[in-house]
Length: 564
Image (tube, rainbow, N blue to C red):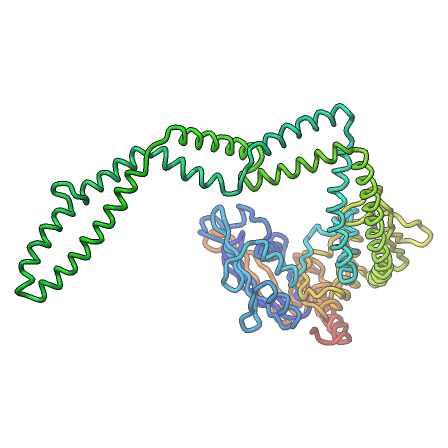
């Protein structure tokens, strides 16, 4: 459940905080008061696109913070699987919008927007002002069905998706296999040249690293010898060297050691240093005598490195990749050398894969068709509750000519709103108001099968009035018994059903326009209903009608019980 919304420096809102309650939360207000900014702020926090004009002028940043109360154990487990730990059953999602960037956090920890969207999909479902228009897009119908039957088809869809990737690769190979004789001979000739070039090099893994090390040593041979011989001159037996100076020092200490044991100990230490230095000088002398610059060795090393680097530039970044490329080209050569056998094997494999795809798609389609019968039956029932008295609502399935990762089903909803009329696609039948009610019916059915706790409707009442509006209000209220509903509306019939009624108002303070939101008490709710009913002039008759509407709504709610 969405427990709290905090908005700062967004559009007309300087700062606002709303505490939402279980059941049906209704938001009303004059046109332009900023009602949609509230829903837009929620969308923003949940990873929606940031518009530059969203941040208030001269404000350093914009902020939206949502606090959810998580009581369901399955939600907790799902969140824990995403490495999200709750704090006192609360989940806080925030987004701070700065110039040119934004920062999203979950329980104080910075996370990518993709993670926020993943979490939000478990908690909340937002129906925007024009979302019902998505029903006119045929491909969305299959998505609605798959959402309804998710638990039944998820495993089959994953299996199909994996099989489709293999099928797609095989299909691509089959297309590329259609070579004429001349093309095949040309490819064979080129492959033979490439394989011969790699095999003649007799590459050894790790060889390039050793050669590069040897090349650096040889290329810097003169510099190395100058440094080594210079060190030998300073430490060896030359006049004034370290060895000579230590010899003088030892002689002096030896004379003094006869008279003081402490000096004798120092003499021993210096003798150890002298021995170490002598050993060092012997090794240094051996290195100088054994090392010489060999022009031929240097040339051979350079040539070998050139060969290896040229092959790496053509066939792979490393020797391992070059050797793998050689294996692949030899395998391709083998295919082309016995091309008829290769084609026959590929043909059999492709045929087997087509049969497998047909089987997987058929299994998925069967489950979908069974689920579609349930879904459309339940939607028909909801539509009848929404004043579609003689409605027929079905789902038509066609088989696509090609396989896809989502099967071969091409499905769409068909509707007939009058007796005797044939079923037709929604786009040819439904008006804007009818689409709103159809979407509400679909959302109601999906809400019963989905665990999402909060549903937000932004002006789902577009294009309806009178008795239909009353029936929509009753449906919204019934839905609010099992889910938290947050709804923006212009209709007094829906507003009267509110368990919690909020008013969004626009005012001017210090020549600055701001929007505020507050919860209404019972009398204030009646006054707001009167405004919605009566417009500019609110008479006693209008107030009486508003009060009566509120009482009738209370009786309806009483029959349904308290929201969970």
